[in-house]
Image 1 (cartoon, rainbow, N blue to C red):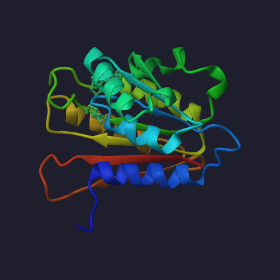
Image 2: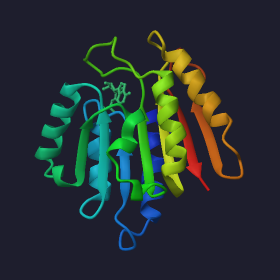
Image 3: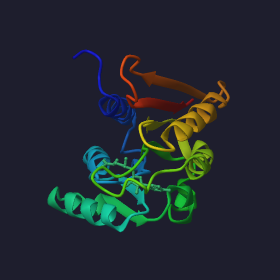
Length: 195
Ligand SMILES: C[S@@+](CC[C@H](N)C(=O)[O-])C[C@H]1O[C@@H](n2cnc3c(N)ncnc32)[C@H](O)[C@@H]1O
């Protein structure tokens, strides 16, 4: 297929940006805002190791334990710091001197696959995190958000994210929204790039 999946697109934008960053200049710092089963955390750790760092956040203990095992198996746990904490509170644990230095942030919204479908990301906490991240992002840094609308509350959250992203000043940010048009409730992708 020529048209990539939402996840493949998100990874493409993250990889393309991180390839341009010089790790010799500063260790590359990135964030997985929704750890879940840890697939994106592992993807980020593989890119930024050995010098860089991935900060990961989730509110479910099983996300932390599954992801810890996944990273251990890949021998990459030392470049990752996992927090059982809402992403809206990331600034309580990421050192303040990294403000303006986050090179990439991934959000995969919704609920944990094979987990409790009533534990979902929510518009208020997602937007709180995004407001802060727009400051914490490095110049040239990228935020990807995979949006899902098939579960209760998903459409409201997707609408809130698209509204937030659309209101960012064009002078400072470039924003894209990528959507499959002919599949009901297909996930879509918002990409925010800081100029
Ligand atoms: C769609 S899953 C993420 C999938 C994950 N990226 C993966 O690779 O498996 C969404 C995750 O967001 C988590 N979550 C919900 N609210 C959150 C919050 N405020 N901060 C951080 N994570 C949150 C859920 O517990 C769930 O694990």
